[in-house]
Length: 186
Image (cartoon, rainbow, N blue to C red; front, side, top):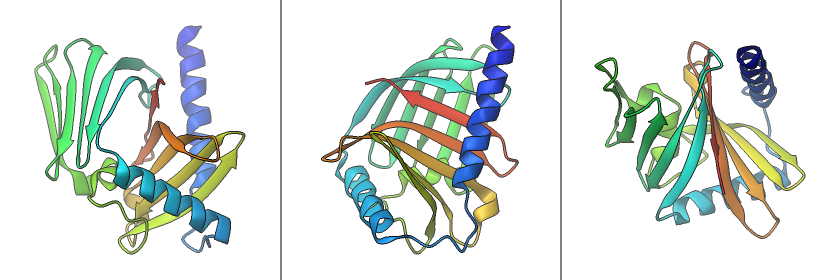
């Protein structure tokens, strides 16, 4: 029963994200432009971010651990699955699972996560904003590589009290339409 709910949640996350994945002709309104500028300012002003996270993989399974971010670098230390780490920076992503002995390496240019690690973050030119969504005390901005929208999509989710933003999660859709969700705690 719990597995079914997790898969349903993953499917709903994918559908919600698909709603954010507008066509390349998506036009930013003046409010969208202001919100995108706020997101850029927030991301470029971060010096560190530490948080507990819960990750949902494409099959609906979950993991959790601690996230450490500093400009251009990200590290996820998993408590479940125990000992697994993901490090990203300097153009590369490495996922190490000591339980299976598997090590996965890829260039950050091949994953939407690389969009978050660019320094400084600019959401124009090489990056296209595909959608901006607002809700009660929330803001979501979806971005992709310009000219390579089919390579994947990154949606940044924020708590938004109007005066300031706080990153509350990420939704990553890869080039095969697999959805990975990271939810951050306060």
